Length: 393
Image (cartoon, rainbow, N blue to C red; front, top):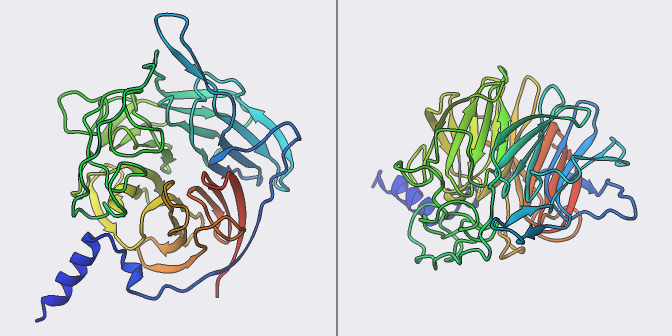
């Protein structure tokens, strides 16, 4: 009889029901506003990334623009489709950075490092691009494909969802819920940009999703740094790994492959690093946050946060982690809440829900938490950025 409870809890998690459904999590009161003011001729698309610098300026990497594929030669060349905007702390538009950049194709994330450098992650260009505070390009990681397949190959129909942890809401590869590991290869051969799972990544001879031991990415999702300046990239939609580089961009190592075991991933959507150098990865498709040391050794996992997509760790002596249980693009009326937890995985509170009004979220893809109780949330489902003021008890 004493073994009955652990078995039931394990079965519940494997069935895709987060532990928060079984335990009361305090609601955090909060206010919300849409603070950003755009010029009349500029419009925000999907707010894939939002970040702030030390001055309080706000940066938004948006799926806005005119994506184009030129097919007049032997190689189809894709460009356009995303823009990087800067606003001051009051929400006033300041400028656009990197306009017409070769690597701006399909926005995935923007982050600002401790030196106020601006880093963008472009999913379909397969690149991580560093700009200094003046907007000048400083470092490139990854390489954009020199050609695109036109038309794209139609991905194989997904197999029926299994009983793995977090395969969750129905069959199909969209948003990683129920999608099987795929055997596609390279850019242009996979599913639509927001679909998770296949292709298997570029690495040859290794396990699916492990990728090449280099800075060649397959639809990367996020970037973070440790105190020494080492760079960590979540290489997440095409591959299923974390790649580590030194502060100058030299490749050090990578870890992970596609699967369910500790240290494996099914779409690592987000990455964050605490003051001790511990690495937290939002393993969205497996409905967990995995925790590693700086060398990629598995430490633990948090299974109580639904489907984590956007994650962020606060600064200061007592750090907290925010994680969004983002609703899938195929159903904007479920989930949507954001959790606050300590770095041991203990839930401190939750706030918000799915929806289209203020204080509701439509597929949150980015959280900026430079201040513990003042957050910015970028939504791809509602095409907006909300500024939140939390009022913890």
